[in-house]
Image 1 (tube, one colour):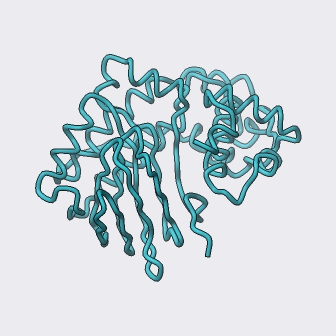
Image 2 (cartoon, one colour):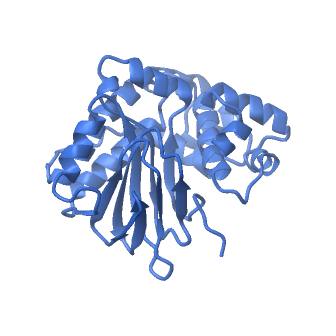
Length: 287
């Protein structure tokens, strides 16, 4: 069976474009700790990833079900439920799901001035071996809060908020308890759900507005106030996030991806992708 880096049923991912990563690296608050990639892979059968030259960010992988493994510095470790490990930036590594009992994992890539501090804090008792994590409802809430805000990354306030949550999320592995509020806007959430269900279509503003029972002008005003972008711009961003997931799965080519996301012209899709992510789909697929 072919190994997979991406493409698991029910997965969640959010990947920051290069311009947003640059924003985080330069922002007075975000530069201390920021997330570049984050996701959840449930029942990730045949999941495997190898980076012989390492990764530019630290990688945390938290197993909540099933089993997996990872190798670093010529040593291999088994990973069991409620264990996590962190791969330091620049370290060659290889990891994957157990063949018969594949893991379900929460993962994130993080960087910044405080990244090494958190790496040393959370691994000081075990070194590079997996570390036990107490099950925490608040940790899950923080994760989904980060994902929700990064879906609205065109509003830089949401990126700054996700950076503050990154501190809380990493600290939760030291059993820190954080009380969270939902901060949900039901209309915007309805729009996002509708958009995600129709990524294969070229939705118009009037179609999105009709779904939530508002006029196009009212919905646009609401998005401008709360999201700092238009509904169509957010819809396009969600399409490109989905494209990122598909590009990391070698079973899809760029032409197929563009058609599956409602773009009849793959060259138009490539221009839109580069405008948002800062690199072409081809370069993203090969990075």
